[in-house]
Every structure is written in structure tokens, then in C-alpha cells.
Image (cartoon, rainbow, N blue to C red; front, side, top):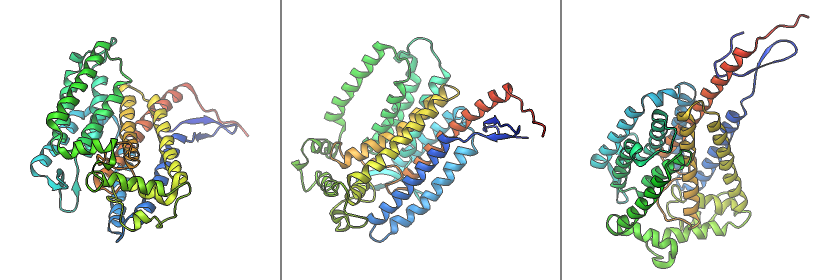
Length: 392
């Protein structure tokens, strides 16, 4: 009997071959389905005329197609082999956005394709994880890496950061660096180099505060310490979000019954503050269910990373998981007034075409790594066993 390359088999008394259930994959797909459904129910409540809701349906369908194609049809080794081509393509898109992009809200972050506004910086987060995994796969060292050993990687990441920062999009640029930082925790880095990186980061923060950050970006950070500093300006969004989240109590006010949401006190309720809508309507209990689902997804990603067949696969999953969970943590913290308002969407909840496609692409790559690992395990198993039919 022929079996798929990624299938596991085991013997049964009758001598038949059966597939072992892939609980990681089943659980991951189940969690994503539940989160997407909850996200749509929540967006329906947040959207007054349902325009965003129906647009998001189409974009999520596109995202699911990307998820299936990348997860089941494209071998993950292709992303390793063509890393520099993918990186170059993303950089071209970012440069085009910088000079020819669509402007909105004081930022120039989108390419207007007519039927779709593409935000390339969402995909820069993914390529940051890919190039980091590719670098440490391609240049293995037994001893700790020094800064001089990583100058190629540092240069490539610096270019991404500078282009995204110039849009300006400090939030996304920062997330790219956080993704790489989490990946570096799993790499043996020379201690002196770590100290230099820390001091360099501190110096960059001082320079950025004094010479690079816009006044509105400084106000967002200051409002974190005191939202009443500018209650009708830069602090308004944060104050209204905290009021909405707190008014939900333990049980919530019920679907489409949130006063802050339905009476339009809550700004950007379909994008940045979508979780405020959910917290107001479903309370602490509903919020904890969503957070636990994301934590369960993280656990599955960690399991998949441990089973990666090489450095690229394992480190890639770590970076991709970081991409999702940094966004989750920042968005929820932003909603609760624990982080500056930086415009980071909540995966599978916030309205947005590029962020939706990027989230499904991220999960597709994780599935591709998992299926590659399963295929490698099956090959090992196939060399060790033979199935002998039992006579009746």
C-alpha cells in the first residue's frame, strides 16, 4: 500500500497500515478556525454599515488560499533557497511605497493596486524571520557569534528598519527587530557582542528620541505614563479604549450591546482597538478564552519548532510564532493602556487585507515546516519496519 511522504504509520493486528493522527496540525487548524469565526462575529458588531465586514470576508478567503498553498503545496526548503530573492522583492516593494505609496493618517505605507491596498511592511516582518533563520543555517559556528560574524545579517535588517521607519511606521519596524531578537535568544552569541548590542540599542533610543521621533510619536509614549496629558488629542484613543475594556466587567454587555462601541465613542474600533470591542461585549471571561487560544497556538508552534529537521526550520518557526504573538501582546497591551498606541493589528481580528494575508502566510509556513518534519520522521520509520500481513 502506498502512503504519502508525510504520513506516519503503525502496525495493527490485522496487518493493515493506518495513518497516525497529526494532533499538532489538527489543533492548529482548529484554533485558527475558532479565532477567525470569533473575529468575524466581533467585526460584525464593530462595523456599522458592514462594509468592512464583507471586505474582510473576501480577504480572509484569499488568506485561506495562501495558507493552503504555502502549507501543503510549496516545500519550505524553497523559502530557504530563494531567501535573498524574496528579501530583494520585499525591499523593492518597500522602496516603491516610500516614493509612490498611498498616504493616509500622516503615513505613506500602502501601494494602491486598484482592487487592493498592499502594505509591504506587514510582509517585512515575515522576511525578517526568514533571513535570520537562513543566515544561521548558512553560516554555522561552533563558538559564539561575534558582531563581525553577523555583519551581513545586520546590514540586511538595518535596511529594512530604515525604509519602514521612514514611512513612518515605528511600530512595524520595532516588531521586525523584536522578532529577530527573540530568534537570537536561541543562538549562541558572544557575551561581549551582546553587551555591545545592548549599549548600541540604548544609544539608538537616545538619538531617536532627540532627533528622529516625530512629536506625535513622543506624545504617544508620554501618554502611556499619563493618558490625561492630552485627553482630547493624542491621549483620547487610549482613554476611550480603557473605558470600553473596563466597562465590560466579568461577563460583558453582550454581542452588539457595548455602549462605547455602538455609540461611536471608541475610535479605530475595527482596526487598532478591535479587542476593546470584544472585551466590552464579552468581558473578562471572553477575553481570557481568546488569550488562552493564542497561548495554545504558541505551545503548538514551540512543539513544531522542536521537531524541525535543521536550523532553518526550527529558527524560522520561532520567528514566525514571535511575529504572531508579539502582535497579540502589543495590541492587547495597547488596548489596556499598557503600551503606546502604535497601530499593530490583532491577528485574525483586526480589519486589514495585508495583515490578514500576512497572518495566514505565517501559519502556512509553520504548517510547511511541520509537514516537512513529519515527512522526515516517516522516512526514518519506513526504513525500520516492514508490514507482514496476518493470515486469516
